[in-house]
Image 1 (tube, one colour):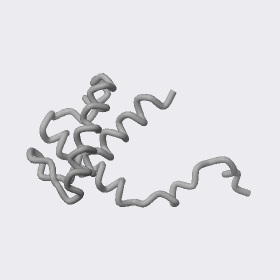
Image 2 (cartoon, rainbow, N blue to C red; image 1 turned 180 degrees about the vertical axis):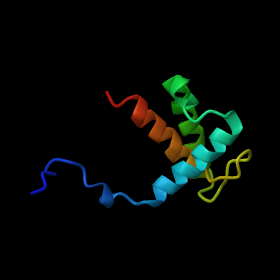
Image 3 (cartoon, rainbow, N blue to C red; image 1 turned 90 degrees about the vertical axis):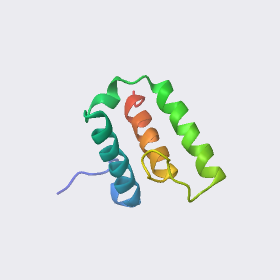
Amino acid sequence: MKYDEGKPKLTLCPTDIITAVARVREYGVKKYGDSDGWKDVEPQRYRDAAFRHFVSYINDPSGVDEESGLPHLWHLACNIAFLCAMEKD
C-alpha cells in the first residue's frame, strides 16, 4: 500500500521550468561562486529583479538577458523560485 493522498503530483508540472531555473542557477553559481548565497539576499531584491525580467519579457518575449545571454523568462522563473522558497512559511 502507498499513502500519497494529499501529496502534490509533481509530474503535472512542465519539466522545462526545472531546466530553465537550473540554467540560470548554473550561471549565478559561476558568477558569484556560491550555490547557497541566494538565501542571504533580501526578498525585495528578487521581487525587483523578477519585475525587471517580467517587463523585459513582456516587451520582447524572445529577449535575453544582456549579461547572461539567457532568456528573461528563465530569469523570471528563477527569481520566482527563490521567492517561493523564501516565503513558503
